[in-house]
Image (cartoon, rainbow, N blue to C red):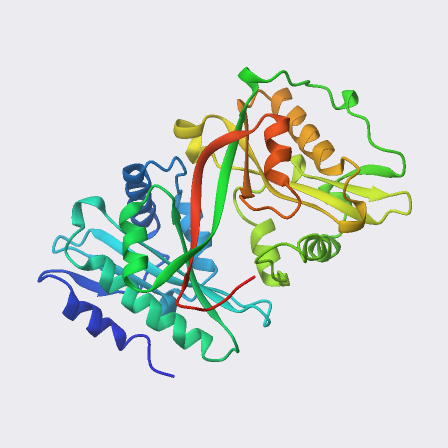
Length: 339
């Protein structure tokens, strides 16, 4: 395996004079990286914003000294960054996502191409230890520049996702959980009442038949539950009479988005075991999520959905009152297949 540090010289050679390249430093780059990513998001019309904590969690999930790259201008300001983000918990579906951003004022200088070349090379190094690994990437569906870059390097779109928003001002929502009816045979439990490892296994079971799903390992699960946006007190589990968890809803909140999407909570993770579907459990969990948010004067809720959801989740969310806010496209490199 080649040395990822050695590739930096190749990137430097591809950049205009005066730019420098190094790996990301979590101790000093978080604020600058968040500002960079947010500048790009604003430019392409995406309302999601990153905080320094978000960037810290992003870097915690990779090896910054090996998997990231930062480009600075002559004044030392960060103008671009890239990362090879590995998802290898499930050896049957190993993949690396190429991530990156170039400041809108620094485009058309070859920086994006240099970042892609480096992250692609790093992804191949990571996947060399696996069989049938794939290289993938995401971008907002309005980001035509990035989509053109992906296509130029042989990537093709394979899946579309939608972020949907519900406004309480447009939908009557109770503030009292007692207005909901839990079906016979099921009981609601607070997040802290169920073992985290049991929930991880439940999550993997719920998503085992979904497109692109893979097993989430203990480390990735711990990172998710330890993230700054997770709201355990607003999350909920449904169990059977025997106390077996069969459905769950995890709530998240990102205050940095308040200027763009309002004072809003997210249904960040929602799952129902296959044998318990069709009984209204997902609808119940969402409705109880909405009631909690409404009771504490949030303006609404957000939720992500696969446009081709196996369970018809997109139609369910529309019936509840969610409407499309923005979309994202997933790309894959070359002729590789993935499901």
